[in-house]
Image 1 (cartoon, helix red, strand yellow):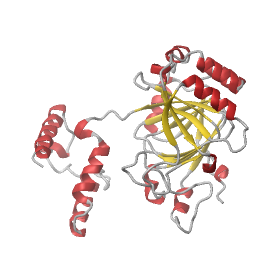
Image 2 (tube, helix red, strand yellow):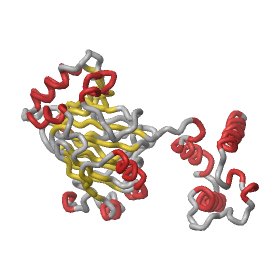
Image 3 (cartoon, one colour):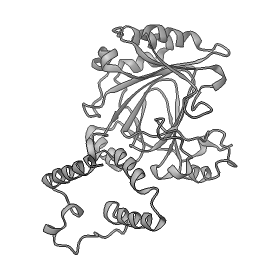
Image 4 (tube, one colour):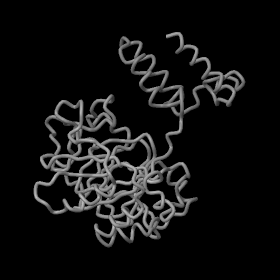
Length: 337
C-alpha cells in the first residue's frame, strides 16, 4: 500500500495578507494557510467539542432545509459510485439542520453506524449570522461560504472548476492532491455523472487494474490540516479528502469559474468532444497541432509574430470589440446546427 503520509508536503504560509493571497492564487499551486481564521468564534467552538460546535451552529439555524447525504456502514465512509456507476453509493435528501446535527453527534462512536453528513450547505441563506461572526478578509465577495459536517468520511478523488479554500473548524483532514495534467493516470469515471470521480482508491490502489496510477502518485502531494488550518486548492487540481476524526467540520469557499456562454471552458471541451474526437487520425492530428500552436502556444515563441499586429485578428490579443464580434459569429454558426 502506498505511504500517502510520506508524500511531499504542500507548502505552508503563515498569516497571509490579502495582497499576498492574490500572488498565491496567481501561482496556481496548493498552499496551506495558517492563522487566517484564528479570529473566528466558530473555530473556538470547534476546538472545544462536537456538542459545543453543534450548539453554535444550531443557534444560528433559521429553519431552511439542508442538503444531507447518508451512506450505509458497509461503505466504510467512502463516498463513491454505486456498482453500475450510474448512481452513487450514498443517498441525498433535504433535512433539518438541527435534527441532522443532533443525529451526527449521536452516531459518534456507535458500531456499524451509517455515515451521515451535511455537505455544501450555503451558509448565507441557512446560517446568515455565521457570515457576520466569521468573516474572511482574503476572499472575493462573491465567494460564498459552504458548510460540511460529518464523521470519518472519504471523498473520492475529483476536481472543481473553481478555486477552493477549505477551512477546518473541527477534526483533522488529509488532502491528497494531484496536478491537473495527471488526469490520464487517475482513471476518471463518467463525465455525465458529475462530479467525475477517479475509480482508484488511493489508500488501497489496485495497481494491476490501474497501473498508471503509480505515475500519478509520483506527482502527488499531501496536506495534513488541523482545526484552524486552511488549504488553497487551485481550480482543476484533483484532490482526495479524508476526514480523520469521528466528528469533522469544514467551511469552504469556491470562486473563479465566472466565464459565461461561449467562453465557458467546459462547454468548449464538450464541443471539442463532439466535433473532433471521432475524426480520422490525420484530421485529429491537424487539429491537435492547431490547438497546440494557436491556443496553448506549445512552441514557446509567438506563432503570429510574423503577422502585422493590425492583421492578427483572433489569433492575436483580442480587444473587447473583437471578442464580441467572434461571440456573435459563433452564435450564428451554432444556431444553424
